[in-house]
Length: 186
Image 1 (cartoon, one colour):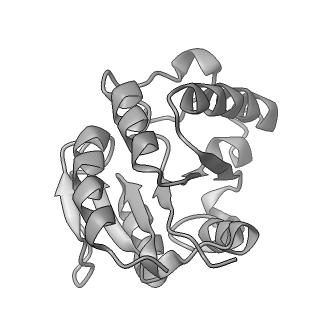
Image 2 (image 1 turned 135 degrees about the horizontal axis):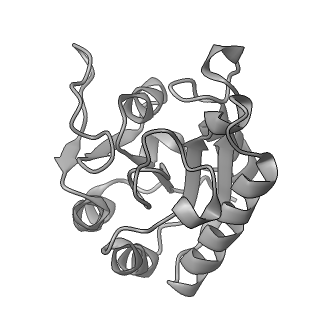
Image 3 (image 1 turned 45 degrees about the vertical axis):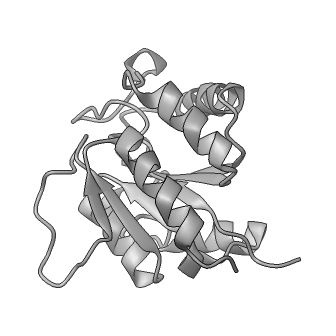
């Protein structure tokens, strides 16, 4: 089996509304108005999806693993109903000072998914709002699309180049439609 091309999506600020002090309860998890339509279009592209999200609210004691799993079960159910092939929803539960390998900008979640699902990272795309999303993708040679929702307006560090900076997930899917037709398949 050959390695596959995948769309990696950050969660908060890309798929759902960003909450500054973290989503601590399922009632705080709210999609953007464009989320369902954008993900349905992504599903029609046939590009499998892996959601990768830092959830330090667990490590900080602000929420629990159980609550995050409840949110992810809802997300998975909704994404499946919109026609998205979801390979996995991966999250880092650690506090930023824990020094783990999974927390973006480190690459542990992405590398784990690549190994588990035979993903070609260099032919895959990362869609995120934060600098750390772009840094993780950059370390792995991935295509980088940054959305302006969430934290997507903060400046990038010198030397970090991205492939596109678009308004939101809907425009990211527009961009991926042309990218996936021109990017080489593994």
